[in-house]
Length: 425
Image (cartoon, rainbow, N blue to C red; front, side, top):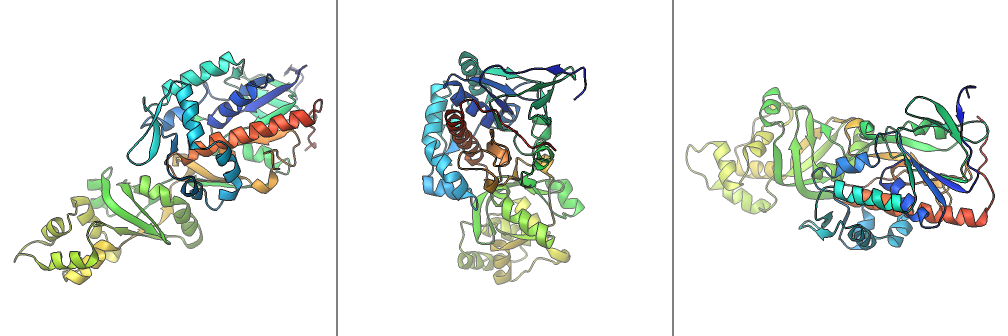
């Protein structure tokens, strides 16, 4: 380290939390109740910036569905998250939010929101609670890794370097989506240098590229595709999607994004199956398309018989190789009920809602501590799991953070005077 750097040493037991997002703040709250000195460091100008962005369209905290179905949303990493989510389930999260003054309600979809919908009232109340508990929040503080003596190294707003050596460190730095809000994934190299195994960070809850015709892209970019059923490899979702200039995105696409991404990575494309008339059985649709008037256009047949929107009708015309729509009722009905949309690429992680990949669970012990770094814990989206939108992302971050906080308390109880020691690079 340079000679002119500032040196800061902690003379008492302390816990440093790096990352001021949902996981870091939740861990800070629980740990502060133990009476230890808690300091949260974040490189952004304020805490919880990604939480605020997530709440712009309505802060979806969790979901009200049965816990068995809830946990299945984390497949294939469900076993790694089950204990944490069961210990702090959706019902407990609702109690926590209500206690903050952000009373929650269950929407028609089963999703849980604060009544104010926005994230800002909840975050303000939360930060006030943390201040009351004595938690110290440092913004504009960029973590640089460790020095050879195991000190945490930071750079402050003025560009000055300083070091601290807390009793315990919790890393809650997020994944690599929305890097402008703080989670850029730069921590990967710092941990890999310490022999921590990390699965590559990849986009999750993301959009995909489709080779639209210029006319279709120009006319329908930004238009929602409503009342459709989307299927891929045995998984089916009924929801909405939105056409973009380069492809397609939206809640239905996000729910299937993990499998779609993986197939595109291995095969170069993925064929998503769309049922554009999910409320009409195939045989009924065939009959309806047969009962048409003379000289009626194909578009009018589809609009009246299948109740298709202009977007859905034009989508059918975007078939492979410019093949014209079939006129026979049997073939046309089959196309409407099982339209094949070819996705040719995954949109970049910087435009994704969340990310997959991260620290392997095998590299953590049962208390959320990184095996290669005694006294260093990890929580939240840094770990190798993913989930669809709908409240599953935040719930896992909160639950996992509380599990890590309990792990830290256990470490402090069993190592009352031990400072973390790290191997030199």
